[in-house]
Structures are given as structure tokens and as C-alpha cells.
Image (tube, helix red, strand yellow):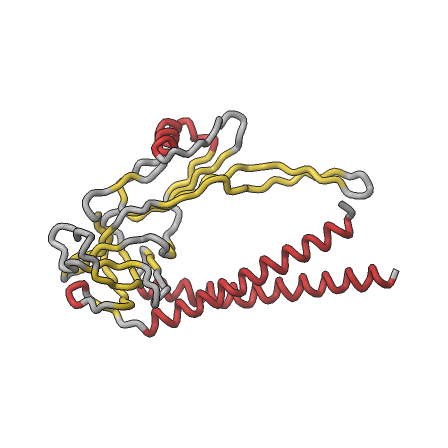
Length: 263
């Protein structure tokens, strides 16, 4: 591939990335408006439809274990990345080696969890929810030996063929929600007579999930003010940053094409 073609390819990729960031920013703006316009409910007075609940996390029946560190939690998500080197050669014969982290495996728990406030407890089905929680543990190749047995056991339990770790530079990252953590949920309350609620639940036969008519489903371990504060800077950053990247790449692509045609 010539240097000229590489520039075109980078510009096209930049346009795609910029547009993705732009629309992600619009999505965050819509989420922010929805949060601001949805009143907070108590578990005892949940109405069917889109609801906002604030409380603390609790296990549905029992806690689960995070995949790598085996911490007691009610929800987890994880990624496994591998550091890969790529060598390229330009038209003058100069070589350059660059490294990047590439995701090779990811997943999340599908167990029900509960939100508990001072009026009761209601089950939450996190399937298809946007779960915004910080990183709790990062395991790199240097300390992999301390967690090798639990990591191997987790992948075996999930029937995931991971392969040998010998000679590979890996990074294992896990996020989880522990019992008692602050919990914010914006989702759809539906009657679910087929699901047995947690013991002592005040939200009997009610479950919070992703609804067909209310597609917003957001879970965070921050309070409402914390969620809005994060979205207040993320939304404009994504929108304007994405638009800037897109326009810059379009300009670069147009300039390259016009310069090539002028030759």
C-alpha cells in the first residue's frame, strides 16, 4: 500500500470514528435530558413505565464473584486486552514499529441484582443496560501469576477458549458493583409474575429492565447529581470533538484527492 493510499485510509477511518463520537454525544445529550425530566420514585410507589430510582445495590438472592479478583459483587463486566506490535515500512524503506492494546475478550454478568431504598427492594435485570461504573481492578502480565488460577477457572466456567498466556502481554480489567454501593437506575418498570422477587421485596412482581417503548436503560454507581455532572462534560466533548475530527478528515481527504487529480 502506497503512502498516499494509507493517508486516504486513515482519513476515511477518521471520518467513521468522528461520526461515531458525534452520534454518541447526541445520545448522551438525550440521556441527560431524560434524567432531568424524569422524577425520582421510591420503590414502594413505583408506577409502570419509565422510572428513576436511587438507592443502594443489593444481591437478588446471593452475591456473585467478580471474574478475576473474586470480589463479592452483584454485577460485573470485564475486558481482556493484548498488547500487539505492528511494523510498517514507508516508501523510502524506513520501518516503524508501533504498539497498541487490542481487545480480545469481553463480557458481563447476566444475574439479576436489586436496588434497595428506605421503602423496599426491587429486582433489576441488567440485560442490555448501559452500565457506567469505574474500573475496580487491572491485572497485568507482571502480576498475572497471583490470579492465574481464578482467571483460568472463570474462562473454563464460561466455556471460553483463551489459549496460552506464555509470551503474551495481557491486561485484564474488571468493573463491578458491590453490595451496599450507591445505585442509580433509569429504566422501565414492568410487571413480571414469572420472576420471583428478592425476599422481602416491596416491588412484588415488578422488575426494572429495558423496555420496548422506553429504550433508555442506564445504571450507575453514582447519584443523580454525579451522573448529570459526568454527562454535562461528556456530551459536548463527544459532539464537538466528533464533529471536529469528521470535518478535519473530510478536508484532508478532499485536499488529497484534489492534489492527486492536479498531478
